[in-house]
Image (cartoon, rainbow, N blue to C red; front, side, top):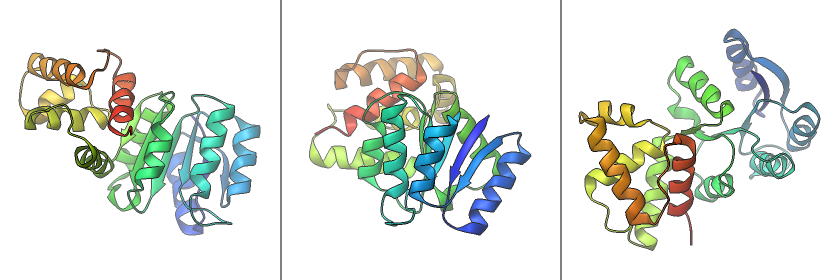
Length: 215
């Protein structure tokens, strides 16, 4: 797996490089600024970009804007965003086109190496890796702006787990119900939200998140 990494803090960047290499990843570039990230993404064509939101020179949303520009130039480029906080606008922009692997992790909630590497691999493979807090805030915002089609508490639980990238089997195990029950809840969710039912985990998650974040 070929990775471009962008993180402005040297110790964290060096630690991430060592971690990724220990799990067999090839680091094509490890950069610390927006211009360096843009150049690396344009020239190196990585399998996945692992990007801090706030990079020099602006220290605002430089990292994400570079990643979004790269996705426009190369549709479907897998991007895993790392951030200190839940930035709803950033999550919305990342999910807007609904193509390719995407992830949004909060740095202080990545608790072990296996969890992080699993997220990187999932995104590189075209899947999703969304921190539950990010999902929760997107759902809360949607509920505040517009009721979510009368979802039941259980359907909301299923949606949150779906949006994290979990399969029906994983959701069933987490909620201690049958896969058939999860499939029924999933079908109800899509019907209430006016979305086409899909067995593709990545497409269904992106569709739900994109819908929740509209308007």
